Structure formats: C-alpha cells, structure tokens
Image (tube, rainbow, N blue to C red; front, side, top):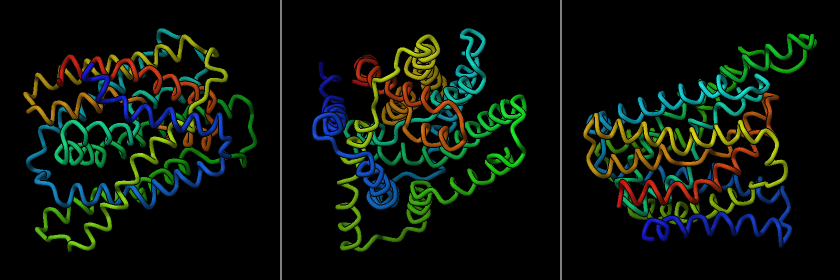
Amino acid sequence: MQSILLITPDFLIILLGAALVAWLKYPKGFWQWAEKLVFYILFPPLLFTSIATSKLTLSTSTTFLAASIITMFLGVAAAWSVRWFVKADPVTHASVFQCAFRFNTYIGFALCSRIYGDEGFALLALLMAFWVPISNTIAVGVLAHAVARRDAQQNVASGRGLSSRQVLKSTFFAVVKNPLIIATVCGLLFNISGFVIPGVALDFMKHLGSASLAMGLLCIGAGLQVKGLTSGLKLLAAATFVRLVVISVFALIMIHVFELPAAAAGVLLIFASLPTGQSCYVMTANMRGDAAAVANLTTMHTVAAMATLPIWISLFIL
C-alpha cells in the first residue's frame, strides 16, 4: 500500500491530463505547445540546478553508470529477441523495438526525487546524459534500416524521404542540441568547477523547475489513446513485458553484481521499470515508421506501469 501511495500522485496527474482532453476538449495544439514549454523552458533549469548543487561527480558515479548501461544494453538485446517469437512487419518491429530501452523522463524524475530526494534526481539526470545519446543512436539506426529496406522493396523513388545517413546526421544534431542533455552536462561542469549559483538565479530556476514535472505528467495523460489498442496485441504485450518486467530483472542482477548502495540501486531499478516515453512516437512518425503501433504501445506501457511499478518499489526499495 505504501508503494501504491508513492506513485498515486503522479498517475493521478496523468489521468487528469487524459480527462482534460476527454471532458474539457483541450485542443491538440494546446498540448503540443505545453510539451515544448516543458521541454525547452521549464525542465532544463530543474536538471541544471539539481546536478550543479549535488555532491555527485562523474568519478564517484562510475559504478552506478556501468551497472545502468549494462542493464539497458541487456534490455536492447531482449527487445531485439522479440522478433524471433512474435511475427510482424519488419518496420513495425523496428518501431516497437526502441520502446524497450527509452524511458519516460517525467515519471522517472518524479519518483526518484520523491523517494531519494536531490541525490536520486541527480543520479537519474547523470544516467540520462549518458543513455539518451546511446539509445537514440540505436533506435534511429534500426528504424532507418528497416524503413530503407521497405522503401527499396516498394520501389520508392530515390527522392522521397530522407536517406539513412541523413536521418542519422539529423538525429546526431538533435541529440547535441537537446536542451535536457545540455542542461545536464552544463550542470555537471558547473559542479566540477566548484562555482556557486547566486541565490537569485537559483531561486528563479527552481521556481521554473517546480512547474515542470506536473506539466510534463499532464502532457503524458493528454497523449494517451485507447483507440486501436487491440491491433497487434501479441506484439504489444511482448514488448510491454520486456520493458516493465524483463529489464527490471536485469537491473536487480546488476545491482547485486555491482553491490550498489541504496540510492543508486533504487534509481537504477526505477529507471529500468519505467514505461517508454512519448518521444518514441514523434521519432517514429518523422521517420515514416509504424507510428500507430508506437502510440498504442506507449499507452499500454503507461497503464501497465501503474501496476508494475508499485510491485518493484514495494519488493526491492521500501
């Protein structure tokens, strides 16, 4: 019950976002601008101040990062193996594949900060700075290859769409210019430098950051959809099982192997147990993958995580 109470506030906000769409008919354009506001303006200051004022450094977090990266690479392998058990279109497989090792930023930070405070928030931010570029590169490479093969089989004109090289190049610059990555790296450099953030600037950024998580969770709820969830149900169920159960088991193994302390172990387990992020849908749609399958899977992950997250938290954290 304690673990359920821990996650309830966050998922109530998500459900509120869904209710605003269903009942008050907030338009789609409103949520698109709200997501941009969170992503570019509100959330980066929270990441920066958390890392800049924490006691974490790269040298003291090496073990945590090693355990986390190995866990997620095992998750990549597990996600790839799904295609051997569930038959589906190669582009659909490639589209769904990424959802196993990409994560929902706002749920993760909300839980880590609630359970482990500033230390948990800073650990997750540090992990995100390393894993986001890696995961994006893997996801884009696999999906670009699948789409290119489909286009070749359909005799698509050479001038249509982006080439694999162009997609990889654009994704590289998208990662480099990602405000969350920039904020995390700048915060880490600021922390290492030993500088102190002036009080007025620190309060200003904290006020911006305090609005980011709630708004981000509302946007998650607004993006949920139930239409078409029964389509390709076997593939979606297998992908959900890998994301919310299998990778969590990998995390528990790595926690034991690396003998992580409580906060680091808890953050890794939460990270491994998170539903996928809505950014998967955006990337898939832009690359002409199976965006509908990814949208359905995102909804399934988020709903299923309401049941699985309390189990992992109650058994291995509380």
